[in-house]
Amino acid sequence: MRASVTVRVAGSTSNLGAGFDCVGVAVGRWLRVTARARHGAAGRPVAPVAIERSGTLRALQTEPEADLLYRGFAAACRRAGREVPAGLALAADSDIPVARGLGSSAAATVAGAAAAAALLELTLDPAALAELCSELEGHPDNVAPAVFGGATLVLGGPDGLIVTPLPFHESLALVFAVPDFTVETKRARAALPATLPHADAVRAAAKSAALVHGLAHADPRLLAAGLDDVLHVPFRRSLVPGYDEVTTAARGAGAYGATLSGSGPTIVAVVVSSDVRAVGDAMVRAWGARGIAAQAFHATRPAGGFETD
Image (cartoon, rainbow, N blue to C red; front, top):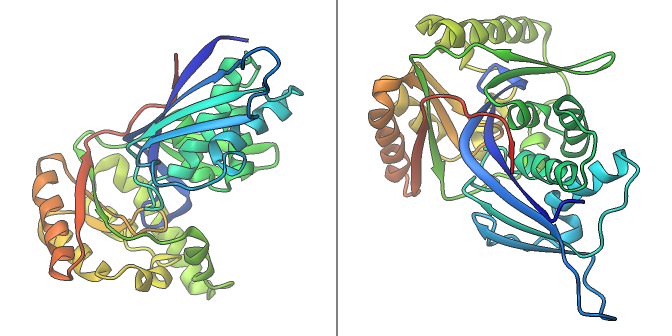
């Protein structure tokens, strides 16, 4: 076992409109985790696991054993038939907004599992890591970009996950407006209907194809169609006060379109790189007009996959 390891994992945006539960993009907001095994004084026991949190994780009150960092670490150990080392210490620092639709849970799960693989020198390649973390966290569209980086398409196949990179045109950028309220994933999932009319399913399939082609070629009409979702946004927009105003403001400032990042409440716009500031400012002003504080940031390129030191 190594003395310590540090893992860095990116946040992610998922769905991107019509790519519901299958399209994700790694975003350059990062979770950094250092893992080591502590040794107490002779004859004195140490806690099974201790987690030190900083950055956006500081306010979390989750018990260490229930934290996704630890759950990812323990799952990797179980997969390899190993025990979690006694006195495990995890120090985590993140600038990924929590519970805002930017993949903080997936990043934590991947970071924990990747830290276990590196610290204990487990045989766990990226494909196995993605499979394991998707089973545990439940959002492969966030897990895949966290593991592999870039823009990804992910779906279940007979032999496990199928993950493939998606082209992301060099002229495009993503602008995020992050409000100062949260939307619980469970609540967002509960808002979705159990079934949809066949005609809506046909439209959804066409829109997802438009999204993928639009991202690859920066095609304005296809991006506008692909970012106008029919599977989840119509049922979740009421959970995000100001959704209509913010997306309208983004388009008015030059965005191809805007939609929920994940299940929200963050809203993401796809723009020409030169328009990132104008679009971000417009989205923040629109929320401000509703009395809601928000912050904007942008990603001119998808981030890379996880890194281990």
